[in-house]
Length: 111
Length: 114
Image (cartoon, rainbow over all chains, first blue to last red; front, side, top):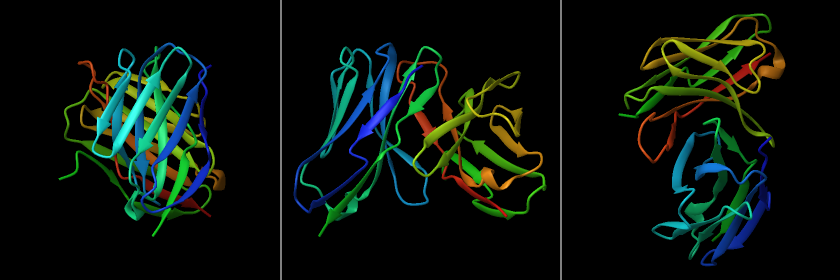
């Protein structure tokens, strides 16, 4: 059974810092991995989607990497801003075509 | 307009009541999903549908039922609501064809069962 873990559960950084969020998964047989952002009480916004054949994807200040063989993905946020404060979720899609979610990392960027 | 909409956005109901949460999408996707989110537990899959005639149970389907009225509409029902069904509920869609398989989420329905 696929399990997705995100570490740390919470992170607080001062504005301007670069930071890395981690996601690990137990079954490397995945189709893709998706990173989402969730603001308090709100829905999920897709940030980046990495196919299993890809190593990384970039969007603005965000860069996501995927190492399928080791079951790991990272989300790198450059020059963090208070507006980046949110919960970040990773999810993997496997052979069953279901998304399995991690429990998220709550990020607080202090001005 | 949002691609995936959910109604209601917030609902408070009493134990034992029947309640329906509705989801509509304008993306033309075949596949639709219902998730619930509880603090510290992430999102868990309740039901999913690959087309109007194909409905499947997810990890936590007990106490829930669904109806796929059309390609664009997927409803979740709680036949007799109980307090531990208090949660944030999300509907999502995915395109059946194509390489991306990116999932799109609605804004969520916050349900409180007293």
